[in-house]
Image (cartoon, rainbow, N blue to C red; front, side, top):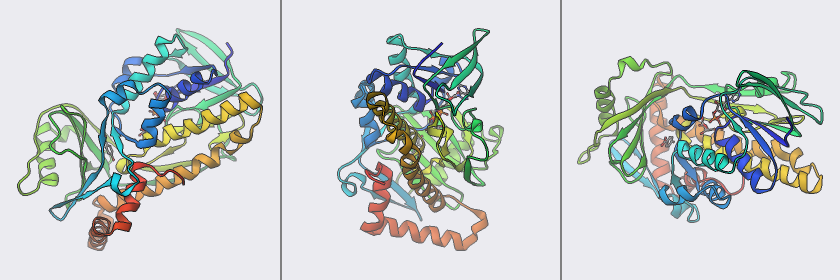
Length: 390
Ligand code: APR
Ligand code: PHB
């Protein structure tokens, strides 16, 4: 089989790339290791930057996003028993964020792809990439029990952090940068109306907590936990009890509801450079990971594929490789900005025993600064809604 762009992975990065290419008349084949049902029910992030929501809408993939996405103009930071609003839109030229689950983005893109009769194969196995430095890179895989070879012009490695594309780049070429955190997030999805109109990021001596949402009937909540936290120790009642303590305020209570999903995610910061080797281009989690506190993971993934789609479009149209050659550098500028912002939000809000009381005092000082200084609040706001230029 032959195609123009072979895409490994049907997460938000792979699916969006395929769609953007299709709009430009460029063919692709997406190969996904999991089932359709699995990728459509994985609960993930839920905050889209202004420009990323626009990207989906402009590409014709945002009908439901426009109907059901909830536009927010601010977030709240809670510490020392008080809540402080950061008026994002006021501080960042009117830009907003849109609350819309990554799962919904994935469902919308899968439906568009399959309705158009375009190739998206689920449950492929034994995926490997080869001949990356030639003009005919190939993807090998097994589907329905048969070994296949897909010949491509280029390959997009959109197969997430645990995929096979990044490890196919020689170790002499790839540089890795990372930081581990000794905590994780325990997250729940609950059938209850969100208790606050805007997201609440709460600093608490017992650890961080976050109140978020998915819809007028669905709340998404997180508490800081150990990276290897055993869910058996966290029956629903204990999760609510801890959320009540960390998010609680005089005169305000968190409404509780049925827990629909519960999981623990570890946290890390990670960047692989360069994001390209020969005819293999990495995008999204395959190339970088941020801790979720800045809500940047999904946005970075979609930014990467926007840059890649533009570069491939120019290459097929004009034969010029200039934008493809600039791909890695262009993406990494935004990646490192998001790495810094995510690390900074994480350090400001999480309990870190190793930093002791000195660290705690620094956090509280920084939180007070961010919520009282126009300049500091603007810095948070423009990073949160997404910088226009980096
Ligand atoms: N072959 C084919 N597909 C694979 C392989 C493989 N060897 N390995 C992994 N995959 C698939 C996964 O099953 C997954 O569906 O690649 C996809 C990668 O998708 P994501 O992990 O969602 O990564 P990405 O599309 O880059 O989106 C980044 O996801 O994890 C969140 O916070 C992150 O919001 C960010 C977003
Ligand atoms: C979410 O709603 O899942 C969410 C929101 C904000 C974050 C991370 C996750 O920073």
